[in-house]
Image (cartoon, rainbow, N blue to C red; front, side, top):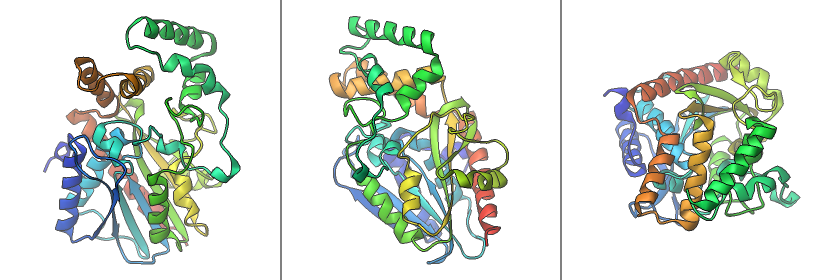
Length: 361
């Protein structure tokens, strides 16, 4: 099978390929049903988990897809391909690999970045007992992002304000204000939620089950929509003390939002927090692999359009169909060259992660 064939056009097809590949390898799959929503084709939605390797290993590598729903085409393709090609047959001693297919099955199926409650799951993993964080920068731009119409007078007025903001403060400042995460407007962009989501609870349970007693935990979480076309930026996330270890595993091209070397803004409440919380005695080496598709302003525009569509538009209209294509193009490079780039980088990084874990004592 060629690399592009590992990728799928829909969540339902991607899940079918994943389950079939696991069955052919003799791997047991734990399927966690999200009963809060249905898929775009009316299908049931699942976070599927498979453990490869012995139980109770001290070293665990998580490889996850679709934290941001419609970005799941990328990670799913790599997961399916590795299963099809016989990866993980000869794991290092005392090591297990946990494949998590579709952390956000709703967003994957509906080709949305958010979950069924408009929550960006990579902003949802906070300690809610400490209260909700403020984001005054987002509050300043919210009304610009969510106009009453799309490509009408309200949109044009909002766009003029965005252009003026970027001209005065810079694109980086605008990107950070929009994408950093907010817990103010449930109808807005990059909304982190007012409480833990189904995914939050489920992922924590999965992490505790498979890595609760581990000594060394690594995470590779596949994402799309930032950076150069097809390039997999390795963005370190989590405890800053682990950054030198990540660079020793993956090389000097590991980036850090906190250090200002990443295409990503500084983000709080990312999924690595939930995974690592469940393995309190382990070292944590967590990386998001971020593959570029389109220029950042085009990606942000597609997110604004998708947000407007589900708030105020008609998904079945011609305008709605055009917006759905727009958001799909922003997160899925549905071309053979892009898929091959995803595969080469992704499998290379997985190998480096396993070698890094091998060296841990």
